[in-house]
Image 1: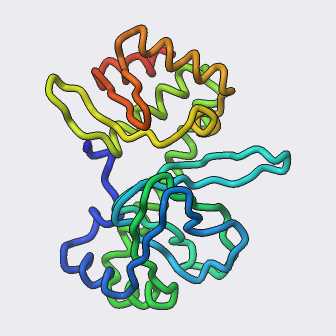
Image 2 (image 1 turned 45 degrees about the horizontal axis):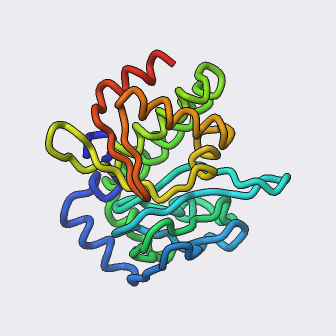
Length: 225
């Protein structure tokens, strides 16, 4: 995992991590399970311990809009520590998932007792704003191939594991329709993008897995599209 894969838990000291995790209770969800649902009261936050989830919402036309993928070490529902408001998105398990559910009141008390940890929360919020800005720019300046490539790079940087020869193995528990939604592309153009990247020998795709053969070349390719 590269520096781009730094999570909320990574930003805390070992002592702060232990103190925080003891505040909540462990819970597990099977693949396809709904972790939180749009519109529900935001009365808790969740720190993921393992597995992958998608953060998404249904648009008014009935189509799914996928905002992000999150994994171990990520904090979900952090807005519950700042204001009382309903959930703004649904979180669904893409794989088997384990996490610690933290009541909002306890999380607020934790930040009050450990004010230096608020910097990790601020960094999380600013990183998400920056990512949203970059994606909006991609929608204007990049074609479907460039956007799909950027999402694959994000997966490799955040969740990839190094293999011999410089390859990176990445879990890919998304179907093409979900990847297309995340990339702001049609399913057909997403399929063409994956095929083009395979032909360039930048990636190999397998069932539920992706192998990035050369991450630097894939980044360079994304920069040119």
